Image (cartoon, rainbow, N blue to C red; front, side, top):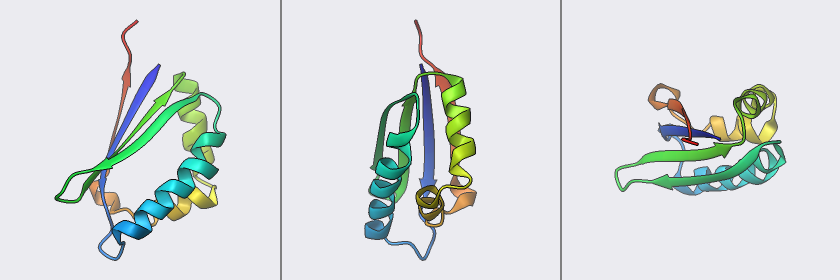
Length: 96
């Protein structure tokens, strides 16, 4: 299993409510439609840092989702609310 961890901050013009709506949309319309998705959750700190943790079955599932996200309307809307300079993405293999 692959654990994918995104940390990010919102774009200056994005509101928390707007981001939460986009997050719910991308989770339902994009992530829940992807093969290999095990679980996805989003959380934030009081100072405005966000984390999105996604559990995938395989590395191939991660790569297929990343490719599909480049032309998905829900993923694009989600991405438009993020300060892209703040994004960090790491992937971890679970221990078997």
